[in-house]
Image (cartoon, rainbow, N blue to C red; front, side, top):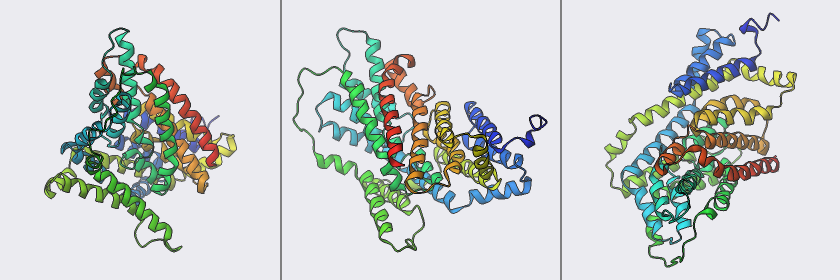
Length: 433
């Protein structure tokens, strides 16, 4: 009984969960998530008995590790590429060139948000909302609020397929780094979930849109024009695939370049392609690395690495594994629930990855191969579900505001696609194992 009143004697699992709750709660009050995570990591180190000097030393080692530096570099390149393509008008040209190739309003309503969703712009759903609305004009009869809720959900749902698998998203990059897996391998594991996401959206959402009286199937635009505008994205995919393939052909000692090189090289090639295509001066590109958004996300990387590093060095990881067995708590419950709760509370992919994976990864660190990837997929997807249902998700709020409806009117449209995707996640998890 005395242990209950002495926090120093609490089980490591309880300490980690308390720190986790404090981090998530603090982030709700608009405190920078990087600061929350770093503070939580330092608190955990001290609570586990490391001592002030050892806690600070281990935090510094975590921040300056090669993994941290690679992650920071990838995040910075990704954000600069996103800003460059948006501000140069290349994103608009991609959308416009595709619009010339497709005459089906239903297809356009899905593809426009999906294309824009390949670039991780905060609030990007607001950019695609007018295009979705233009494909489905207001009906002459029928309740307008029903149409508004449906179009809000269409715009919201199809925008987020890239969160599962696209390596330009900070959440995906962070997940790959924290899980310590190959970028291409994790992309391949997550792609089926993205396909189910799109297919369920077509079945439950697009089929509800009014069918046009007559569809014009003539191809007015040029496929070449569309591909040229997509050059930076195509360059990134090509470079990542080629370098990853070369790594597979190397000897057992591994390739001579550092881990994570395929993604860094792919982002570098994409950035060069975008700068050349848009005739952006080198100094302007370099100046983008000093933007507030870039520096803010780099601060988040620091917080993540501090939290994760102190989870390991404080002995919390080993203690939790012993306690889970002792108390009979299935690790699978922690793997799924922590990311889901984080996604629901933060409403952003990078938030649920940053808050939950440093706790989840140690619980599955003893696994190998496809079993490890299966649990990584489950954790990432569970967090995605929480994020998509979160009333704090910026894209959800912006779409709702644009179409002038309530969130409660949109949720019924989400239940069908979410249920199918959840069932597919369970099946894919069992198959991977």
